Image 1 (cartoon, one colour):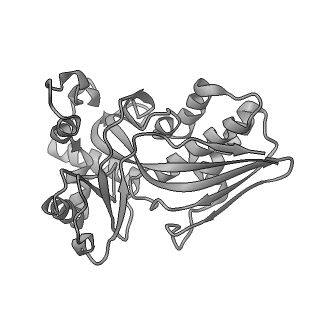
Image 2 (cartoon, rainbow, N blue to C red; image 1 turned 45 degrees about the vertical axis):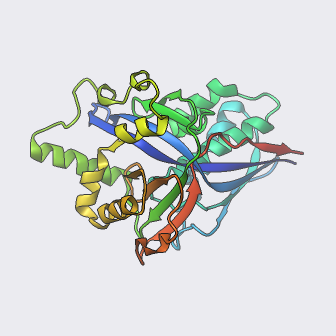
Length: 306
């Protein structure tokens, strides 16, 4: 039996601009992804019999993650097996440390991690191009998680990924409320609000038109300061209108000394970037869970063994 273990790292969005709905139902986006150290733990075993997924862990919702066949990690393994004609059987052990439905990319990261693990175990790997093709079929965020970059800019519906140089590591607080925000709901709210206001809000030429240009950084400016000035999330006013507590979390993080405080993706997690963590992060609220982590400068590699 061959075994691989991999950390499926969470992500935050330092920048997120959303364009109008496309004819295919998707939206063009322009976003800057950044990995953090918080990660799900995944063990993949390949053998000749059966296909199974076992999920446990401190961030597993009481209701679970739904049917196995709809789980992104499981779907990634099935898609890989169909494309590579290998393996016939696999088992996946998934330990959930990333909150579900929080905009941290946990499901997409799990899928990317499984693809990377299987390719590390395969005697005839699909390689980077093959993984990217599969990732695009699985979800808009999954290509970032197989890209090999700890920080990247993504356009299209998220599948066009360009790696960026890592940022110096910073401390992070994640404020996780006791509810999630479904991505489909957030996009629907965004479309509805834009229709009511009579404004597309983003240029017709695409969300990337208002993206920060890395080459525009003034000489001598600290990279984090440049990112801070460019930081933005189109979902914030839309989601915070439905969940006002999220805005309070952002304001509290800034009061505690965060240089950047944003909604991650479509939420519901709010993150704060710090040079040094506040001494009393627990006063950010009694309902929310506050997690400590750090921004990542690298992608954790797969550990494969016989």
